[in-house]
Image (tube, rainbow, N blue to C red; front, side, top):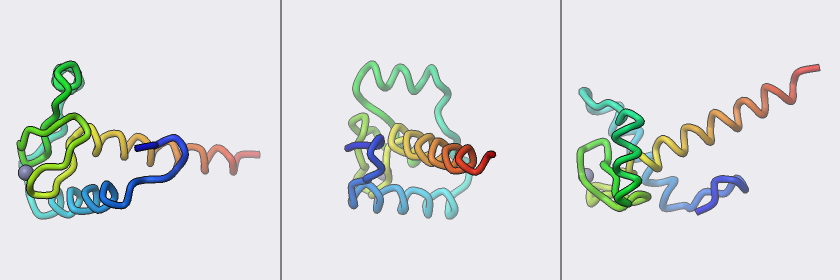
Length: 90
Ligand SMILES: [Zn+2]
């Protein structure tokens, strides 16, 4: 997986799309706080938004991406957006 060259694995993109659809269909979820995420990363595991426990960059049996993947994708989106905005500045 490579976030830095702008390519995203197709199955990962599918999992992320499914996860965002899940966000829209479900309430009561919240992203993990940074300490929790750090604990998961230290153990090489991660929760998905539906509470499934998977490997750090895993996709659960329901097809949802782990929080690590979701948050990394959001950070990559933000960085791309910031880069586009920055390039428009005089
Ligand atoms: Zn699941």
